[in-house]
Amino acid sequence: MSQSQTQNESNVSKLDPNWRNDALDLGLDYGMQTIAVRAGQHRTDEGEHSEAIFTTSSYVYTSAADAAAHFNGDKTGNVYSRHTNPSVRTFERRLAALENGERAVATASGMGAILTMCLAYLKAGDHLLAANQLFGSSIGLFNNYMAKFDVEVSYVDCFDNDAWAKAVQPNTKVIYCESPSNPLAQICDIEYLSQLCKDNDILLVVDNCFATPALQRPLDLGADVVIHSATKYLDGQGRVLGGALVGSDALMQEAFTVVRSGGISMSPFNAWVFTKGLETLKLRMQAHCQNANQVADFLVNHPNVSTVHFSGLSDHPAHELATRQHHMKGGYGAIMGFEVKPSASLDSKAAAWHVIDSTQMVSITNNLGDAKTTITHPATTTHFRLTAEARAEAGVKDGLIRLSVGLEDVEDIIKDLARGLDSL
Image (cartoon, rainbow, N blue to C red; front, side, top):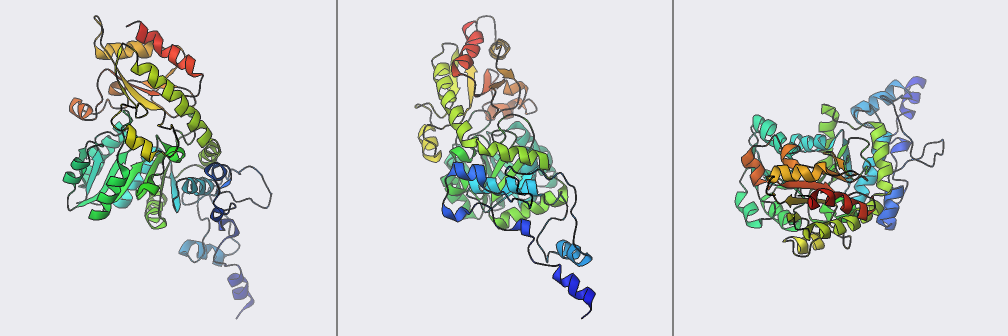
């Protein structure tokens, strides 16, 4: 054996040092807040305390043999930041730990995560069964693009278990739902859907964007894949875009292949922002939920509000289910929809716009999950591309307002909403 061969083979180990086990031993049964602060990090030889940002597109190998081993799969390690990146990997590991999943795959946006799910788990001739109560862009993706590639799509009410069962077809491959949903914060029975999927060899995919693992872990309830728009609460301050999928290693490998091949990858800087956001996720969600519970009580007692869609209300039809599925006591999320009554001079849409336009502090924007309270009119923003019939099926009426309750003093939030409601 030549000296060159010996040197090359000595440079090829099966596992790069920076791909070793998580710095936090998750086998020691740490609590959620400890995991949120410490899981997933690998410290470099520099000994940094805070997680580093690896703003690099590529990586250097010790030899030609080392490079070949990375590319052919003999060695696990970084190849290209469209594939893997240390900053992104830290976020993925931490989120997977929080969701009790084996692995997470990060994407460039929440919609990128949903597209990845479709490309990974569906093919021509398959059937996607989804809830009526979804983000408008998700419906647009399913109807306009997946249908174009011969994926059949149908919808049922998220809370109607019988409708889910009746809508299952022999070619149904994925059941997809949001719980809580956008914009009405409706709740699906995840354990029921899980059993339905297991009985019919279907994947259950749950968008956990509104609850986050701080309130709910769909994998623990039987879901196969969890979807996140990390842009929302995982960041928590409306700074950057990102998404993620969480599940078993086998299912995530399929998702990873899509991200790697399709370039739906998350940037290292955004991953670092999300990693830091996870550190305070549980604390922020507790505060969000406390504020939301009080705002909901105000709205449900206001004479110019006809309906409040929020499972934290004791008379909400899904209150018991939400209480069972959300492991944080008193935590029902901070997104709610409320319907404004028309006045003598204003129809439902005009009345809703009046309430929105009368705010002085609350931000009029389509984003949510922010430290700042945000407000929007779904029928003319997030769901405006849907037909009137599709909006009706989703419960998006002209008088509906979606509110994402932030972290300001709750008295100030209520006062700002009252400006428009009191003057109708």
